Image 1 (tube, one colour):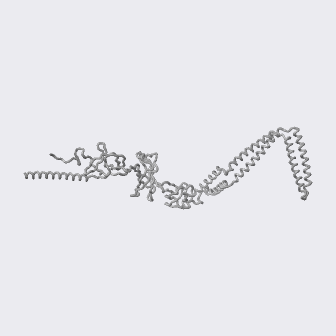
Image 2 (tube, rainbow, N blue to C red):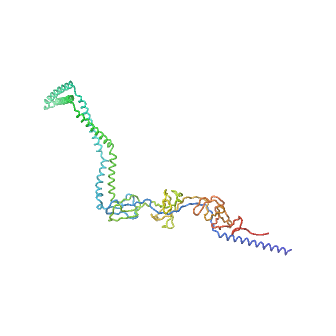
Image 3 (tube, rainbow, N blue to C red):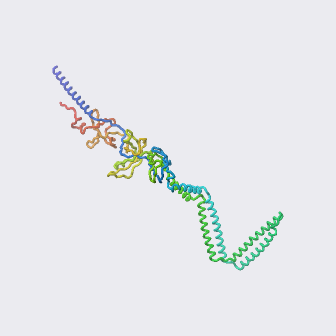
Length: 479
């Protein structure tokens, strides 16, 4: 009996040893297999969708300065790399080398400026216009009175009118003779006692003279019968006086509140035109920037149209890149960009999209759209003309669960990843959202942050759904 127990005990030990060896071998195989996988933890982060493009750096604004006239260069004031402000003179031509029309423009400018100053600063024109208006009114009134008199005289006077007028004239003549005689008696006397008598005599003579003239005019009125030609001439003179009065009134209305705006504008335009001619003798910076090209030296003979300088506003650097028609609708103004340069190793620059072309260009059968980006942190190393590699961030999802695209598989129409748990790969079904070139957003499934995702799962293996495989199956056994 004792011997039988020992035999049973020995058999149990042998079976246990075999089972332990098998389990250990299985674990070693699993560990060895697990060591074959490349894994990465599933993490939450930001998913960025990007579009890449290349282009050329340019200045925000560029100006090519050309000479507007011929001559000999007298001075060159700037060098390449100098900073200039708008309005700074960069170079001048020698006055003696200029065309005659340019030289004479200086005298023309003095005259035109003086005329403008006189128009703005003097009241002479308005004062003269007022005098002309008063004189025109007087001329019109006189011509109107003359015509009225002729029209009235044309009817003639009756015999009684004429006789009465003649009688009044006779009385006026007698009164005048008496007054004249009385004045002659006292006009040569001296002494204070005669001053009153002399003054009274002079007054009487003056009144008698006026009465005589009125009586004569009255008689003439009744005697005078103007012809038709006289009346027509008077009417024509009145019409002319009326036209002159209207002209004088318009001129006064134009000048009474100061110089006419059209006259001032015309003189200012003339001054500006002459000044523009004189400005042709020098090149002036139209904008603030950096001198990037100098094409002239003192003594050079230049002709109209010859290039003198190039200015670049380097305060804002831009890059124009070409984006395919496939991607252009994803690009929007304001999107951030990352910029790198082959000429500047190991450094990234940043910026944003500032302009998106609305019309594409066709080249060799491909349609591309120009997208302009502004470099926000450019430094002295970035120069116009450099080739820029631009990455446009067209979408950014923050705090999402991410998986590498290379780890995703399609099994029976379902997206899955394989997760290493307890040394064994397990299939995990997932639902994907947005994606980039390297990562995808997980919006559904059993994947959790921290899970070890297998990047290089074999093409096929069994994870417990039946069948064999390099990582499938279980311990065999029997009764």
